[in-house]
Image (tube, rainbow, N blue to C red; front, side):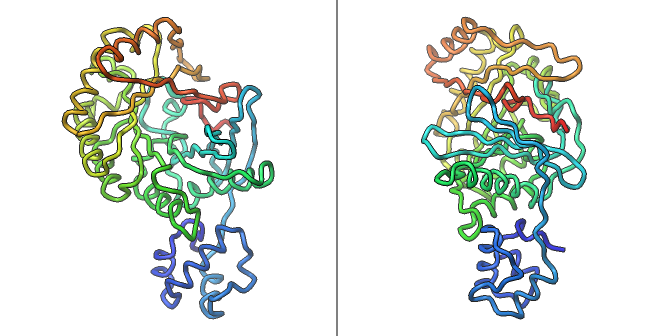
Length: 350
């Protein structure tokens, strides 16, 4: 059976010959507006709708738990499908009534980043296209009940899993998220975050040039990055930066480089200086500078997790080294920590 919320009009028309592209658009629109396909759909022939009913369905994910933060407007959803649990976070944006959805792309993660709860789980499986899309639909329905005048403005692929290790499903999901007859989200409001997979970064640039790229840097010092991000041993940062240059030249979009500061590990002046040199070299090659996002470490519930958050004075000193080198930074507010919804804390706990 075809999961209808996981199809664009073109893919639905291709899967069901006899259904025209115009009819497929009407069906997709009905699906994403939660209309019952047992009822007639305007401008769709009965024979075409019968085909859709016979070969398609709209599977649901189970909302196991909804947890709102007591300190900010972040909301975490624990979802389950196929017997597996994964998490999604509703993120408030600066403009009132607009929200972004932090979606998961895998159950668990194989990247092994030591400062991330998901990275310590190992990989169970990739999420299907419809399971990724349904996370946004769950949040949209929740907003409709709680704040009817609000809307989902953007999506960030930064939940559980490495999005670019599941590139086919992620790119299919992006096509549906941006499809006017489906969720109609501006591609420029979508960000795909990666720990650093060079070939899929290039593929993202080619397939979705309006979508933004985020890269977890960890540290610009190779020996430190390899220690906290094992992926670096296979894909050194130089290769990742080369792919970022390709992406920036292709899309003309500035990448977001994220650094989660770990006390005494990657927060030294030497780390800041190496990051400044990397950013300046990137800007010279790519024609645009990266956006440097400094993220406070959020405690994670994992065996052997012994990192501590960099204190305010050291963080300020780190950022000052970059500022003096001509590389501006911003401090990312990472909300929902009291319900384990902040950056690095998602672990799909059932």
